[in-house]
Image 1 (tube, rainbow, N blue to C red):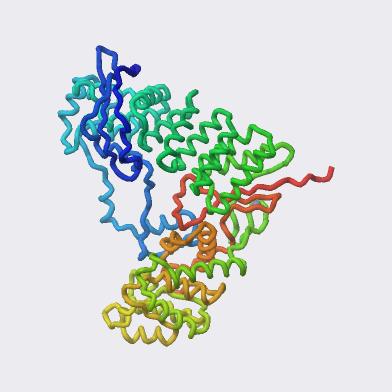
Image 2: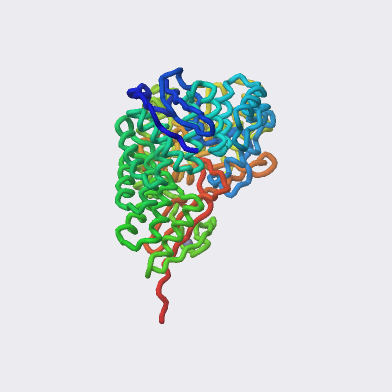
Amino acid sequence: MTFYLSGFRSIPKLWKSNPYFELGPATSSASFFFCVIGNQQRWLSVKATTPPNGKALNLLVTKARTHKKGNNNNEQVSSDPHYFAAGAAKKRSHIGANPQDQGHALPVRSSVQLPTKPLNSKEWDKLKEDFKGKASFEDFIISQMTRNCSSVDVAKSLLAWVAAKNNGIVGYNLLVKYLYLCVFHKQTSEVIDVYEIMKAKYKSLESGGYTLLIRGLIHSDRWRESLLLLEDVKKVMVPSKKNYGDCIQGALLHQDVNTAWSLYQELVGHNLVPPLETLKAFFDYGKDINDDHYSDKLLDILLYLRNNQLYPGESFAHSIKMWFESIPGRQWKGQFTTIQKSGQCSGCGRTIESIHLSPEEYEFLKEKIMRDVIDGGDQYKKTTPQELKRFESFVNSCPPFDIVIDGLNVAKMFSKGRESQNLLGVVSQLAQQNLQLLVLGRKHMLRPSSLWRKDEMEQVRKQAHCFFADNISEDDPFLLYATLNSGNHCKFITKDLLRDHKACLPDARTQRLFFKWQQGHQLAIMKGFQKSKLTFQHTLSYDTVVQTTGDSWHIPYDEDLVQRSSCEVPTKWLCLQRKTPGPC
Ligand SMILES: [Zn+2]
């Protein structure tokens, strides 16, 4: 089956009113005439009709969304290797999962069975009769098809049936989802047909259409036209990292290395984070070429991973290993391994970089965060400047603390027991070790209640310095300020992972230092402490980051089957060593 073009009239600047496809439904009003003559299905014309269904435009948005597991702050800590280990948050969230919540994710059931082979008109009519949903049948069925990645032929039979019923008109919703299926199944000739229709019809497209066309075209002989589409996107907005990534892959597929690198430069120049699959493509391509210049660029990519705290996936790690081992004459040998608690690589025995910040790094981070906390902008609007001033003078009147405790958080950490009792338990155990403690709390904790007993709170105040903020205040700024102000030895206890705060930090370096500092300074209480002595999960002694000594590389990577949350680090490593030439 082939699509033919004929008799298009132009509709100027079709989606121009809304170039930002991802941000909301577009206001397009185009439809294609689709004509069925016998077995031949032909595109005949395009004319303005009703606006397309916004759902179509959400397709990519839905696709792009990653499924994120929420964390339950109140659940018990499991006995994972360390707090920041990949997958630990997921396990924690399972432990605390509420069975009542489970029903929410059930998909909407429908009596309609998605066809697995092309249907004729009568069969489509019959299927529509069975459909009981509120939405339009056509929209529903094409959405199901994209979700289930139905075959292009089945989708095409749907379009033919719709066209036959609507004087040859096929709505935009159906068309763009059809394009999606063509791209998904790498049906390049179909992609090119739809591309021709769009090119003939529209001066410009919205970014969702461009994204699909670029992705579809890079596998064809006409891949260079994807670069032209990219130029079109640039006229209205910065292309997405996906758009750049696809064009780079297209260039590498067709051995145009210079184009690939210059697109890469452009991508990074826009402060976009390149997709890992794009970086992997450079390594895969690198195996076949022996060129120092190219090698240097690959090493730059590894340093980029380091500086941006990025970790390759499992297959990317394999690509890196294979590339190193393919370098002629250098004798690199790679192995997949883990790091011991002491910070030694189990593969080669070298010591991994310490988690501890150097004095310079510490000062830099402290300076940045203090300035944020004290002079901070909007991110701290839940705390008044007056209160921060009050806190600042309080902190300066105390000796440096050893441990700063998020009182409310610690009190709620255990499912059993009164809150004040839990807090007192933790404080007493730490006070016995002669540690200078700071408990951060809220004023409501001082108001006697069934959860907060006066005598227990008085005991807390005897054993620790306490600061009670207004009930509306956020804890993070106080916690960070007090801990950093006390010095590099000071640790803090909270189950909170301070993610919001990290996101507010001004640049990648500060964020990276903050994450490193957090890993080395945040204490997590092991569960079951009420029955036994208070124990903490061990904090990492080494820094999980891409690193090199010149003749070795250590590269943490994400395993395919482990879901790592953004506040965790991988536990698997690629260890690369250059074999020193033995005596011969
Ligand atoms: Zn090693």
